[in-house]
Image (tube, rainbow, N blue to C red; front, side):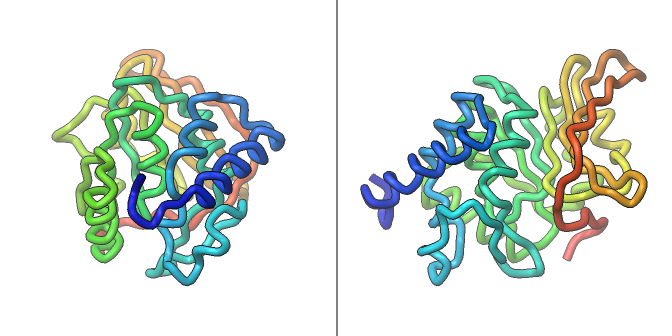
Length: 215
């Protein structure tokens, strides 16, 4: 058992997974990850009583830990398979990264805010979660480790960054919130060939904005 993770927390996680199933999340691998990853350890300790509510909460630097339904939904759309290489843009607290790793993916994650990068890296080490982190601009992706089977972006962008398009394998996919007609919409792009992508629109969503540069 992970330190500060109790049977009570495990029960709350299972209940959360059951709630997400009732809300439409059907991927067993994703639900098992939600029931396994100790979300309360990715949040400020003062917010622990709320950790297994289906809500977003602040993590500092004007960022949030996404609500569990959003994490589960994006992960279900991405559908990571055992051993696939996944690039995440926007590490934040590290919770989404941990869910991806729990699904069996080989996770590479980029964070532009130094304090969040440092705290997430420390958290992965303490919890023995295998995630490879980079402090950098998410718009650049992570070319040195490309190509990726899947790419997930956890912030709302005006358009899909070109670097992410070229770093995705042919046959791979990108799940990203995109601003279209003044609405942020959840988009999945599947790379069909060198220059062609199939686009699917899964409706409106809410995320912090994706920003360029580092801080």
